[in-house]
Image 1 (cartoon, helix red, strand yellow):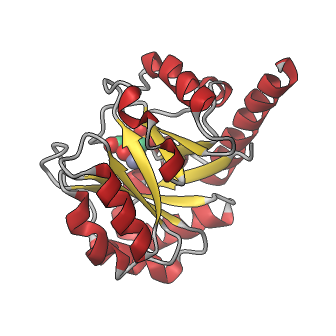
Image 2 (tube, protein in one colour; image 1 turned 60 degrees about the vertical axis):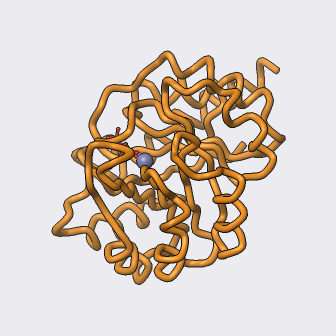
Length: 227
Ligand code: DX5
Ligand code: ZN
């Protein structure tokens, strides 16, 4: 599967967001990952439609709106008004809304959809939804902050979900990804690599994007060769 890199702007410089996003896009990232937090679902507040509207003006790749919010359905319309067709509405199975309803409404609005699950959440919670979404997002940290440590215990869950997912489903891994562990995630079936610190805190973000992609590609090829 094609490896895609999603640059999470949570570790970008908020006062130079345009510069940082442009740099990431010039480095060839496939998605801009926007972490949206409501202070309830996670103990942090981040970006809302105001910022996404600004990003839309400079986005040359799709945006992945990662909604770490209790009620994703309430935010479909406000974000749709400032997003591009085909941007991803990535919401959590642990949220308080009916996931099938959120998928239906987000699709009707013109979003692509992704269902996400936190590290402690059992994979059975999302299994029946895999055929109804455009992407699965497996969290490898407990969401809330950039710069946390990767939780390797999610790897068997990732493998299981890749094994049962419809062929070709994009599976994104998010949280604590570095050059040291990206191969592990790619080997277990992640093909969309979200990274904040590993890109924006790197001395050379362009090189960091290249390295993450190369390491993930090599690891995913090994799997194919092994059959
Ligand atoms: C965590 C966010 C992640 C985060 C990743 O709550 O969903 O997207 O920004 O940051 P790093 O790559 O620094 O772990
Ligand atoms: Zn995220």
